[in-house]
Image (cartoon, rainbow, N blue to C red):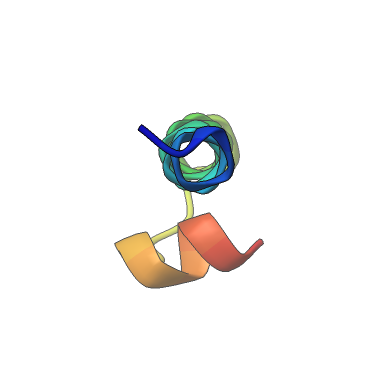
Length: 38
């Protein structure tokens, strides 16, 4: 298994979770893709 590939997947998952938490905290409605990008 490639460690770099796992790192990218983990970063996407963590980014998505962080974006979702920020969305809940700020009461904004953004899409999942925007959560991951931000």
